[in-house]
Image (cartoon, rainbow over all chains, first blue to last red):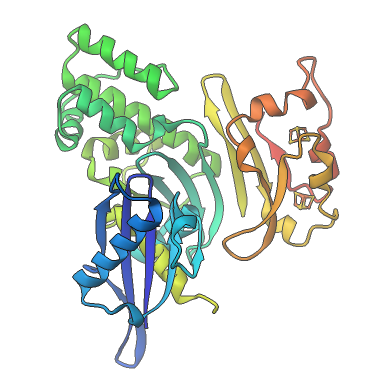
Length: 269
Length: 94
Ligand code: SF4
Ligand code: SF4
């Protein structure tokens, strides 16, 4: 049986197909290279973008549409996926996908482009407790991205630069707009780029940590979402949480789509 | 599940937490719906198909202002939502 999860984020659409195979008679779920990640095309509505991403993913994976038994949508635009049989929040999908990939994870931190959230999960990937920040995007990837542009660094360079800094420059602003003006004044006062990069990533980590603390940090902590690729952020987050180890799944931006595909395997109708 | 709705900003942390396990077998007849003068609660079907209370989307970014009427600066002893929910599912962080 093949199921699909589609994660309609604010900037990208991710599709994952999941196939249940029998290995030595026992059912096993297999997923992998069958994901498709497209930037949200500006000229398309959300439902058209979902359709386009899904068709491209089918084609890339050599799967016929009729083979897909159930589709579950997640993400901010999940209601727009007309062909989905069901939709679930990013919270449930994130927890489910994370525990599948990192079975020992009990605290999940999800940092996407526009939102961050802390989730506590049980061993089955069921959510026990969650918190997001409905108001402030400073605990999210888009903020780090726009700050890296202000420093004229790629996101990768931005993360690496922050690792070269041992300075702690507190950023007081709670809001991305004000934080941006703090960064501009740091640039004008010739603060080294690596120190500014660390200040920004520390600030994002501290916002995200506040959400994780709301739910209580328990067991092993996993980080999912695109910010996993930012080595500087991972370090800032470890420091802010006071943990030495953090589970970092492969293809972290696909974890929620994978969670949706897993939920699809449990689906009703 | 404990669902925390709200935000943290420069002035503080404003979350309403709902212990949704208590909502599944609500022993208060969904009293939260009528108790809040702002009508901030709704019953939703969550991802596990349980019928539980949630804070409506439009209030999640402005709780500090929305609850001000029940939380006068001089202090308060009870909140209508917390008192009405006898199972004790609702908590405020501020
Ligand atoms: S919040 Fe309280 S009153 Fe409202 S549904 Fe849940 S248990 Fe019932
Ligand atoms: S404190 Fe008052 S306004 Fe706020 S949720 Fe409770 S009843 Fe509603």
